[in-house]
Amino acid sequence: MKNYQGIVFDLDGVICSTDRFHYLAWKKLADRLGIPFDEQVNNRLRGVSRMDSLEIILEKSPRTYTQEEKEKFAEEKNAAYRELLGEMSPADLSVEVRDTLDTLRFRGYLLAIGSSSKNTPFILERIGLGNYFDAVSDGNNISHSKPDPEVFLKGAEMIGLDPEVCAVVEDAHAGVEGAVRGGFACAAMGDARDDPRAQWHLNSFSDLKDIFL
Image 1 (cartoon, rainbow, N blue to C red):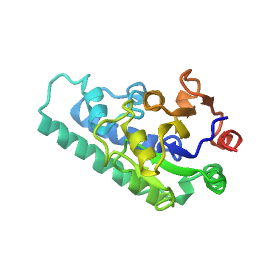
Image 2: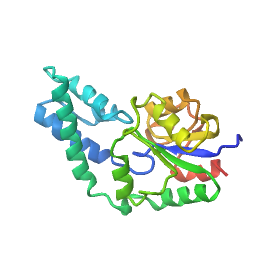
Image 3: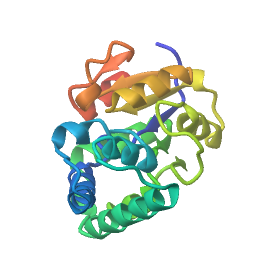
């Protein structure tokens, strides 16, 4: 196998799960605006930036909104989401994930986060990984969300590696597409596990220990 040196991880759905909090926060906003919102719509938001997610939700709105209104809606959703995130703790980081990360680090891999979320630092702090990763590329330092490869390219750059020697771990099809477009090999799990564009298809996070020896 190619001599990989670094691994860039998506956050939500890979390292931990905040799907439930996203859903509740978006639904609270949608209900207030009188817009239908369910799990099917929510699934379309996976790996998508906040403003792009809002646009998807507003597709079912009977009226149009100004950019200023949209920005206020996004802030309203994020405030509700961050309040829910306050419930997170190190208990939300599974033993399997922590053990796998520690094993990969012990084997000499550089580990980075590549997430579209602007709340990434807050979430990492809540689950006890505030200073764990060698680099964090997130919604605070990118201009384009997935499937654009920017967040992964910046993550690799921050750990001083080319995409050819980095792998991406993703659970969303948009993330797998971004990885492939950026020239990365990809390990897919969760909803994206069977994505044919991925090199590896994970049944569990710990499968990474068998891939990156």
